[in-house]
Length: 327
Ligand code: SF4
Ligand code: SF4
Ligand code: FES
Image (cartoon, rainbow, N blue to C red; front, side):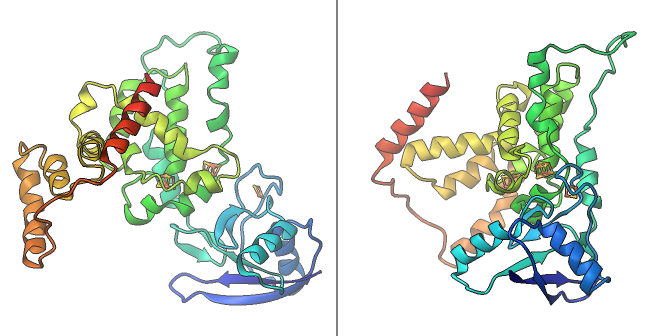
C-alpha cells in the first residue's frame, strides 16, 4: 500500500519544515523499517537514531503521529488505523517528528544531555557505602529481586521525558525516567541510602512533588514502567517521614485535602495563605504572594466570599472512604 510519510525535519536554530516521502509498504512494516528505506532509497540526508531494531536499546525514540514512541515497535498498519479513527482521513499518512523537551540536533536526532543529567541527579547507583563489602556478590531472595523487575525494564528511551508536562514548564524537575530509577533504588534491598534518597526526592519541585500527575508518561512508556505510579510510590514513602512533614509540598497536599473536605472545592484565598504562608507563620512566603493578591484585588479578581459546593457532604464522605480503604 502507498503511504505518505510526513517527516518534520530541522537543523539547530532553523525553522522546522515538513518533508513528504511516498513509500510502498506493508502494514506489518515498522516505522523504523520505513525510515531506513527512505534513507537508503530516497534521501540519504535524513537523520535518525537506531540500533537494536528490537525494542531493547531505546535509541529510536521519536514522535509518531503526535506521541512519543519507539520507531522499531510501532507498525504502519496500527498507525494508519489510529490516524483514520482520529481524522477520518482516507489517505494513509504517518507523521514523524523529533521527541519533545529536548533540543533538535538534526531532523529526528535530539540532544539528550538534560535527560542524562537529570538521571544522574537522582544518584542512580546502588549504595554500598556503609556496608562491609562481602567477598562475593550480594545475594537477594527471589522476592527482593522481583521488586526491581518493572523499573528494571526501563530502556532509557526518553519517550516519557519527551511528553512530560512538568519538564516542559519546570527545568528543575528531574523527570519521570529519573524518578522511576529513583524508586528502583529505594526498592533495592542492597541499597542503604534510603533516608538521604527520600530527603533528596522530597526537595521542592525537583523531585517527586514536581510531577503534575498528567499520566502521559504512563501512557507512552513502551516498557510499561509506568513512571507516574513509581512516583506515587516514592511519595507514599516520603509522607510518613517526620522530617518531611513540614515541607511545602506536603503542606500543599494536606491543605488541598482539608479545604476540599471543608467546602467541596478549593478556597483559593486560604490555599495561598496556608500553603505559601504556612498558616501565617512564614512571613517571607506571605510577602511573596502579597503583590499577586494586591494585583488581583485591583483588577477585581480577588474573591471576597467562598460558597461551599452543593456536593460537599458527598465529597467529604468519598475522601473518608478512600482513607478508610487505605488503612
Ligand atoms: S520509563 Fe519508559 S518511557 Fe521512560 S525512559 Fe524508561 S522505558 Fe522509556
Ligand atoms: S505524570 Fe508526572 S512525571 Fe509523568 S509525564 Fe505527567 S507530569 Fe511528567
Ligand atoms: S532501535 Fe533499539 S529500541 Fe528501537
